[in-house]
Each structure stands twice: as structure tokens, then as C-alpha cells.
Length: 467
Image (cartoon, rainbow, N blue to C red; front, side, top):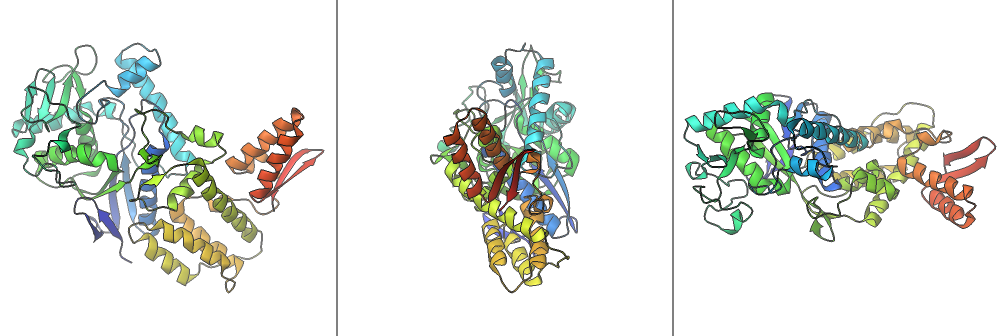
């Protein structure tokens, strides 16, 4: 069955045609590891993982690369402000040295990988760090310089966008619109306000280069790493929608100027996760992490399920109430899977449901319709529970909810086997009982039971089972 994807470059839905038969090469813009990833960031990574799973569901071998930026990213997406890694060093009161910068990058990279595993993402084939590819950046800049696309100013090397006539083609950004370039500072030495940094000078930190000591620009890092691991062109480039106007247009310009061919054939972008209808961002403060979700009794998998119920190209407005509502539906789904798995016999995936499911997810990742199909299947009294289970487990190859790992009914004798959000409620109830806060304890019991679980206090401790 054909896969159709919305290509941000053409602004149309296109039939996917791989460069190499039965294989997909995919680059996902990853995190700048100066702080915890917030759930807006994670939404883009869950989207990329879902895309990968759709291809694998269709029998493709996926070569997925996601970068980790641990140097070179300024606070502005243009060329303004403080380096994000330097900002992290100051925040955590560490010395302003390259050694400290790499250390703090490694710290938050490890936390990021833990977060990916918590939301049940498959690990990319490659997770290259920017700091390990400085020489690749230098060589790419040298190519641009030799071809007349790079020039030097007092603060670094810049890309000359005037010499790349199709600059801004992702999103059809006008070369004459002042509004389009408002996020890039006007440097008196720049030839054009859209020109962007390839190398930033820093006499105190950084690496030696033919132009002076300093750091690579954020944009050049992605171009160098994607080319190194996937070649050029590769099939699909993804990221958050906020990266399209500047970062991704800059990647396209420098890569295509250097090599004379497309960077990627398909560009796909995840819409914003908003709070009070405003973009979630670290710079604005008040962002929510997975830790914050857990404190609100929401599990990472509950968050993942919430995202699956919305179209990836449509902005979603985050609230704890909205995600809890989706999580409650997920708990019911888990309870149903647990009940089905307690029956004897092995089922067979139901062909008609698999065909419909495939049609939905192959139509530009229409996961809302695919998620709704699970409930239609569960309510279908004409199909056996064993076949329903086999079908749901096939669906979960795309959803990534870990349904195959759910224990059977009456098997929750260990609190560690419970979903995170239920375990958190059980722990809170135990604490209330120790403090003899019976009113709170009863309220927590009611909440646990409302989510489809039964809690019993025995001589051997608490026992929790699915109702």
C-alpha cells in the first residue's frame, strides 16, 4: 500500500518514493542539551518515532539519525544572544571552559535518552554529537568558501544568501520581506540581513579553524552530520515547525550550495504544543517536562497516547485535564488488552481491520482515525477476543504504547509492574495511610478504582489488580 506524506517543501501531500527501494533514510533535528527537554520538544521526537514505526510497519528498513547539539547553538535561532551551552554553565555555576561545556552536554544528553526511552521511542540508528564533528563542519565551510558562498566578518564566517537565489524556498519566504527576517539581527558587516553564521569566533573557547578559534554555527552542524551519515540527498528531514523558517532554510541553502543537489526529498514538521494557546518554550519559562507530568499523575506513555489522538500538523493545547482524559482512555485500553491476554489460545490479526488501519497511518500518519479504530474493534462483538488482541498488538507496532508488555488480569502483585500513573496514586495512598489521613486515603482509593483498578490491603502489603 502506498504511503502519502505532507511535504512542507511543496506544501502538498505526496506519494512517498524512496531513494533506495525498501529503505528510508531519515534525519531528525534533535535537542540542544543545555537543559531538560520539555514536552513540546518531546512531541517532535515522538512524531519522528511514529513516522519511523509507520515505515517499519510497511516493511521498510529505516536508517534514522538524530543529532545532539552540545555546542554552537545561540539563544536566538538567528545569530543573536548568548550560546545556550554557555548559559547552562552559568546557570549551574560551572567554569566557562570547553571541558565543562562538554560535561554538561553529556549530562543532559543522558537525561534526553532516558526521556526517549520513557515515552517508548525506538533508539535512532545514530545519535551523533555536534562536538564530535567539528572537522566535518570546517570542511563543509571550506567548500562553501571555495565556491564563493562564504565571507568573513569581525565576528565569524557567514553564508552569502544573495548568491543562493532560492533561499527561503521552504515556506516560500520572500527575499524582500522585513518581517520574514525579523528574528535575524542586522550586523553592519553582513552583506544581507538574512546571511547566517557558519563559524563564530571566540578567543577563549572553542576549536582552531582556518579562520580563527571558535565554534561552528548551529545550522552547519546539521548539514555536516546528515551528509556524513545519510549522504545527500536523503529521503526525509523532520523537526518542529519552529525550525522551518530559519534553521531548515539555512540547512538547505548551505548544503545545496556546497553540493549542487537537494538536501532531502521530503520535509515534515510537527506543529506546536501550546499552553494557553501560546507556544511552549524554555526561553519563556514555565515549560513542562516528563517529571512535571509524573508529578501530575500522568505517565510518559499517557502523554504519548494523547499526542496520537491529534493530527501531527495541527497545534494542540496542553492542559493536565486534557492529557488525563486521554490517559484514562489508555488505561481502559490497557485493561482490555490485559483481559484479552488472560484467555487461552492464540489469535490472528483481523485482515479488514489491519487494512483500514494501514490506510489511516499511511495517509500522512492519520493516527486520530487509527486510534478511534481501536475502540471500534474492541466493541465489535463479531470478533473473538484472541483475534482482537492479535490485531491490537499489530496496531501497537505503530502506536508504540507497549501493549504486549501488559500483564494479564490479576497479575499485578508487584507495584513495580503497574503503569507509572497508577503506581504514583498507590504510593500517595500508602503515605496518606501512614499519616492516618483517612479522608485523603479514601479519595485516592476512589481515584484508583475510577481508573479501572482494584486495591486491597493484605497482611503481605498492598495488592492492586485490574477490575
